[in-house]
Length: 412
Figure 1 (cartoon, rainbow, N blue to C red):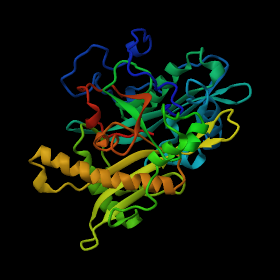
Figure 2 (figure 1 turned 180 degrees about the horizontal axis):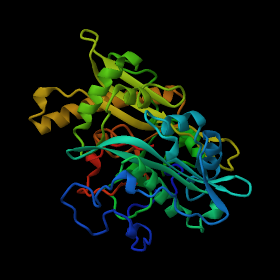
Figure 3 (figure 1 turned 45 degrees about the vertical axis):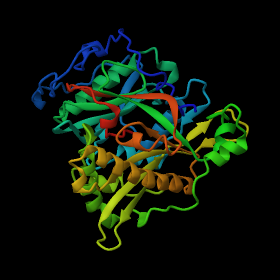
């Protein structure tokens, strides 16, 4: 299958030694073997952080950004696939969810305008997050949505934007950041691959997102990927607001299995990120009918793509696996083989229902990375490997590399 709208996330890791900007930054370098965990450069007192933004070329100016104009910038100038067939279509509700979590800061939505006509031509965002790297939990900035107008990419605005979001983070006393990219920079702490589970094979073929396998017919392909009509996991239902405290405890406990994962510090974080939001995120829980304990949960979010120059379809409705968690019996935790066997069986049942619910919600494809425990179910549930890779990075934080199955962080 083609990797949807991820032109910069293709082909696997191929380090490039020519990184003029990144070679000046506090990041680990290619070939550097890291065994310790901690900052690369020490934090400085906030009153020593410069109050002035870096200089822009004279025809541009720094600005604040509203979601409507950001949507317009991203919809035309953000990531496309290499063949220019797909482009992410970020909706206003999605951007509000992604960029305005609890304690978000408007000053961390950094824009650049043309001074003469005030047109928004570049953007970068930061949001506050709590992350655990191995045994260390810290507050940091999650960097995303670096976007520059296609005609201005020779102006080297990206390094200036990165310096400015870094400065603004420093002003809040935060000196570490996490970010992802399809390109290989100095130096990924983890690399994950995209997988795709077809839900509407006919449409995916018509959009040229996937192809009919050799010696197959379309009818055989449709039959192969047919999802059940209804979920089968006992006690499965949509998550409700009263589930938030239990879901937070379940999620944080489950995420301890991984070496690179978020920490949901309070109920407001779970309410924002996990509780269902109409047309943005879908979340389901399994409630024990006797004890009323939440024992399992899963979620996925919507990120459609515009289909460019296609006579039949304008939009590809893609869902992305988000967070999930399972209450693993305590008696299994001392026997890794038995725990893995039990967990795989549980996840196969749970994620089979995730496919059902994504199909019922009208999605054409369900995408996932091979992180966390996803490798226990993606093959059996007919997720196909894509040609996209996602590299995870830490800024001003030194840590050993993390294998895919020890990554618990899902970035939008």
